[in-house]
Image (tube, one colour):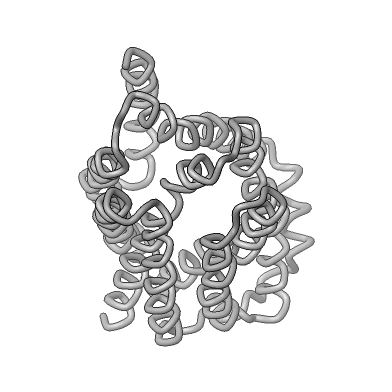
Length: 279
């Protein structure tokens, strides 16, 4: 039970940190004079980096059983590029910070999820939503707080909070139990098997297309709101409302399984996109 509580607190503080940073990155780029094409490139660089970095970190973790140590290192490591980002103004420096952040941040969520699932065990894995829901709470509340801070002190004020929260999260990560080493089959063998599985490839294709659509929305929605005269605080309120809207969905996932979330998401996404298009 103690491990489950630690996992919940980890998600709370980690996503609270993310809520002070991720929603405001494009607004920060805009505030330091970046053009729209430059903002698009800066937003795309982390995604491309994670595409290659996440499998690499996963292979290292599986090969050497470094799940716990790598998680702690990655959490503390994200503090460095974000701290540097607050001092950056030139495009090459901003790009380097964005790539460095994505490279170090890439293994955190997979490793944290792997740890949480092992804590729950085979019989309780559907309770994952009960742990992860605290991430939605932390993300929404911190995004609202970062927006209010930005109104008073500027966009970069929330990035300083990110550094503090990642420090707290790193300490919590040191207390999480290290998962057992993966010994069922080699990483390359597993990757080769999955790469020839049509259902798995179809799933990856669907995830890729969904992620692409939401990336375009999430990166440019803040700028669009700003162009309408919305303050960072108002944008933070919209992020908080969206994040806290996850609470009943996470509850439904715990009660009815992951399939419930897929069905709700598939039904609700077109309606959500159409409403945003009419704003």
